[in-house]
Structure formats: C-alpha cells, structure tokens
Length: 402
Image (cartoon, rainbow, N blue to C red; front, side, top):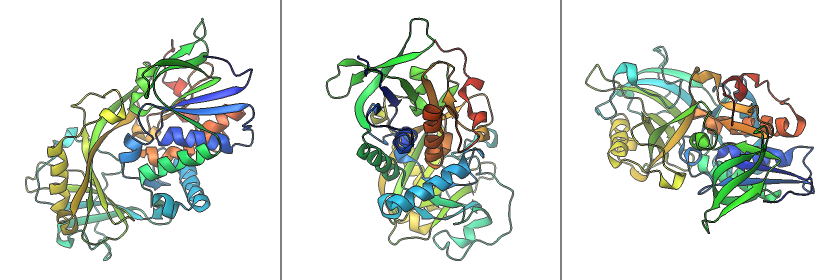
C-alpha cells in the first residue's frame, strides 16, 4: 500500500451495474481531474457476472424508489443517445403490463402468503382491458386480465450484461482501472473513524495486496455484508432462462400471475421479449442455497429452470417451442427492515471516506445510472444535486461501523 502523494484514489468494490455507473459518472464529473484523481473498480470475478448480467433489464420512470427512478430513466435515455445504446446494449422502449393468465403447469406453486416476487409491481387490481393484438405470442384465451404499468413513453429495456460491460468499457476509456481480485476487508484509521485502504486477493496470483484509497465505495450487491457486516441487507436467489423462439416477438415485458388448474396456488414468473430475438423469463425467489464466495461460483437448479419453461410455455406457444439457450441463477440484494419501495442504501456510512451503494433489489439495472450520478456528486461535490435521495441515506439504518 502506498499513498498517491496527496492525490485522490476512489476504489469501487463491485463490478456490477452500480459500480460501473459510479465509475462512469465520476470520470464525467466537471471536478474530475485525471492528473490528480485515480479511480479503480475492484471486481472479484468478472464485470456483470452477477445479477447485473442475468436480470431482465427493464427500466422505468415508475420504478422504485420514486426519488431516483425518473432521474435514472432520463440518464438511460441520454446514455443510449450518446453511445448508440440501441446497437451497443439493446436499448428500446417497450410496453409493460401485469396480466392474469390461466396456465397448465404447477411448478413454482407456493402459498399466497409466502410467494416472493422479483418486482413489487407484479400484483395489481384485475382489469377488464383487452390485451393488445400485437401481443400475439401469448395465447389470447389464457389471459383473464391485462393492466398496463408502462408504455414506450416511460418504459424501456436494455440487455443487462451488455449495458454493464459497455459502461465499464466507456469508463476505462476515460482512465478507470479494473482490478480483478476479491476484496477481503476495508482498513480503517486507528480509531476506526476513516477508511484508508482495501485489502484484496488477486484473481490471477492469489496474493494479498493493500490498495490505498481516499474514498472507498462498497457496491458489492449481496456480498456487501462480507465487508460491512452492519449493513441491513440480505439476498435471495433467482433462476432464469433465455429462449430463442422460432421467430421474433413483439416488444413487451409482462409480470403475470399464472393461475394453474389447482386454484389455491399461484405462479409468478416474469417475461421479457428482447430485441435480439430472444425471450427472457425468471421465476420467484428462493433462499435455500447460501450465497457463495463470488459470482462465478453461483449455481443453478436445472429442475427450477425447466419449471420456468413449463410455466411460461403453458401460456405461450412461441416460448414453449423455442430453444432454451441459457439457464442461470443470480442473487439480488435487498434492504431488511423497511418497505422495499423506499429503495436501496446510497450515500455516506458515517465513517469518513466510506460510501455505500447497495440493496437495489430488482431495480438495479433501472437505477444504476441514477445511483452513479448522485454518488459522483456526493464524492466530488459533497452532496447530491440531481435528485433528493436523502431517504436512501445509509446512516438512517446503519449501526456504528467498526
């Protein structure tokens, strides 16, 4: 470990979408000076290797939290316009709806009281609105209600892995350094009042090293508590599959309540058509398998993936007859002890030079740019000016960090 002769060095722990966007907006900030400020992303396995590469990829003004989502949606649109996001990471505007449908499968069935959703907007009041005719890849007879949540004016999508890796590439073009290694601990001053460095294990050599930091940003998603045990975060595992249908389908994101023939059970998958011609679908959460040491050790259950295919295939012939090209799982972090619509933990921790940006739940891709923007302002200006994110202040929930 060595100082930088008074120069700033921001170390961002985590190479997911949040860490990527923080790095990007730091180098875009007017106060950023590459001659005196270094920025490093410390990533244990690979960029976008976790939920940031395996999520659905919806972005919306109506996402949670309300204090951050509109800003983040605007920034997504700006990024796409500036960097050809349509081609680079599959940006496109979409319709999004809650639907009730009658299906044949019974996989993923769970009691009403214990079911877990990837998105909080999955449950809505029934609507008699007829589903759009262009939504022809869902069997019309299976749908009992269609409630639109968003339209192309306020809802879009990206391919999460392409977006995350693309943003990191743009940040590295501006001088951000990528270090592949697992963060072991944050090191503090003698009295514990200030973060001073990060100890990490190199992915290539397995050697331990200390890296000086004038600011440490923990953006490690579900792995955050490994470095900050007092953070009120937990995680759940989500399975998903990607299917390539025989022909492309229209641009819709659907949050269905799938009612099988057993009436007391309900199945909540999610379905995303993508501009690359594929259809992505994820199932409900589970907490059966503990969080592994890094994203490259995350495993999936083939039976759960097969049930997702059966469940969605029961209301979509295009999905049922398509080729499954990806089976995967990831862990998403969420804040414990408050309503999920309040949002993630974003900002200072109460320890000097130590920042937290985690707990984004199912809206990490949507709120990545907004998080990156306000974090860059906090670090370089001393306060966020693009949005009032005071409700996300980690100090509202953190105990004293030691």
